[in-house]
Image 1 (cartoon, one colour):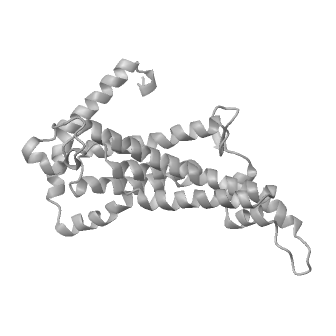
Image 2 (cartoon, rainbow, N blue to C red):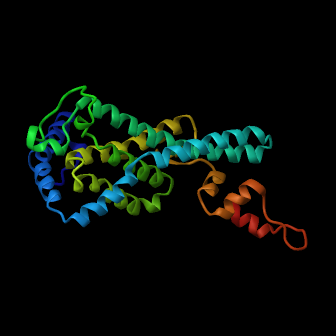
Length: 265
């Protein structure tokens, strides 16, 4: 008989989760910290380079600006087609912004509340040191903000583009792992950040779907992107262009109905 997580009671799930965390803190955290410190300098330097991808500024600044621009363009284009298209852009990018920014905000709040000492203080206070509400960068180890951000971004794109989820989560895992390999976080910090970053966008998707923003519930109880026009926007660039401007004129000034049907399929 196969035991599944959903077959466990809430108490059993809590006990299992706490047991896994305890094993991680007691055994895995110090073990991986020691191994990371023994890595060759050039390897650590490589991971110091890619770890910056886990910052949120390169995601939030462009998406925030794009949302503002799309809203302005929507107001300045009274036509239904253009207004709907720019509204679609704003809601899609807004989903990215809210998911990544919200997950990062929660991670930063938890860092300050939990106040776990960073690995650089391992010899002084060990991996068990917590100073609640410390508001000190040296006591802001868990959860990893970089891991939260990059997994939130991967989850958002995976929701919009499910075929790429394996590639996205693999890349996110390497970037998140860099936080351990350069000694900035413990392994459990990264795992908690990855869990938070993955879960939060799905919660946001559910809230969006409840208001019929970008997503909607299916008859089977799942979720999907709303409408064929939205799916076109998330498809090929030509479909995006057709959604905004209509089909191209042929050389004789006529429109190609076959191409129109293909673009709208």
